Image (cartoon, rainbow, N blue to C red; front, side, top):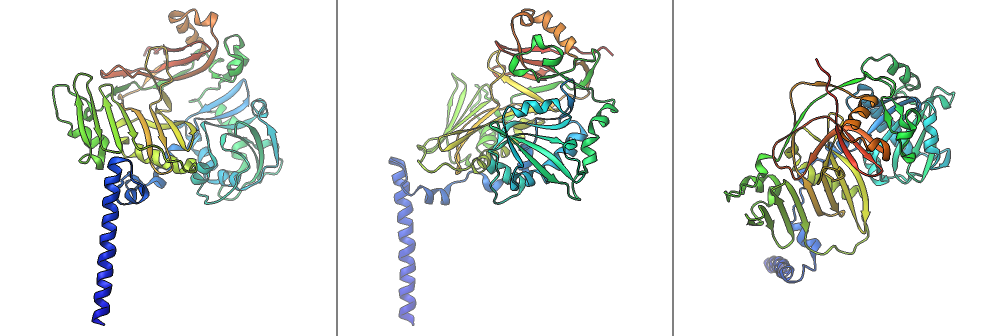
Length: 478
């Protein structure tokens, strides 16, 4: 018995030593040409921050419509954002009840994509997303482990309560940018009754805090690009107003690069987190940038508050992962550093697949309005965050980091289309004669290269067929 115990002890020691040798060989190999057993090294030493973020708890913050529109026709529609109570009532019902039905049911009919614009002419409730959410993400948001939806992602949903005479059935249309799918959904006890959706238009008419809008192509067709005639505008009431805040924007104090100081501790703690003691710091005071790196990771922060990250080893040729797994990586990277942006929301703006990876683009939003970024005065398309990820890790990231705070108090501004035209005529008169509107929204605008503390005022953010413009919104006198 003693001999057997000794033999087992020897075997255990040999196995442990063999394991240590394997890890040591891998580390040495990685320093020269890459570790051949990469999965093993990552399992032991890697820390991508996933364990520090409860993604199930925060995932719904990144899944919501850009707008919900109550429509009677193109002339009369009420556009709701997250500032409106009805927005949350409708979206909670869609997310918790209708989405699982759509993901697990077969459509009654499938129509060509052109059907989507035709649905604008009927009384309905329209849910528009800023991106087309892939099926793998939709199933995750809906809490469904396995299903095979008929659609290829969702870009929009329309509810048409009057289409089916049965009071226990609602008709929904799903748009995936290729086709339109019609569903009949049974209204269960825990869902909003059909009468709620049928009565929303009348409810909006009786509310004093929200005014109807019209499609620009119906009210002012000469100003609209033919492909963008559904832009909603306040065309009927020249006196319509809205209360909004002024924002302050600045580079977070912990990320300011002082060319006279070598202290980098606050930067390391803010962006490197658990890696702050393991990465080598290099400071270039001439260009005023700092770089943190090791054999696999490079972080760079410049004086404009732009953080860039790159994973150095070449991307492994593996089967493409699903969008959900890649999104979890992006979400975790952001959530661990989200406190840096202050009061602003971080919202998903685009999803694209590149080879075996996914690229997620995010923007900033405050008070239901976008904060658009630009590298120059006439361009408002720069993303706040662009992250390329695989299902295993972050591969690249570029993040324009700003801390936003809402100034106390609200001011009243004119948001009528007529007033906007007057202000365009004052600042950019040729626009009205030679350009066509493709996008009109109310929001804020930030120039990335401006490193001073800024006050951001509500503005008309306009994109035409030729350029982008920021036009001040008229403030009403007290």
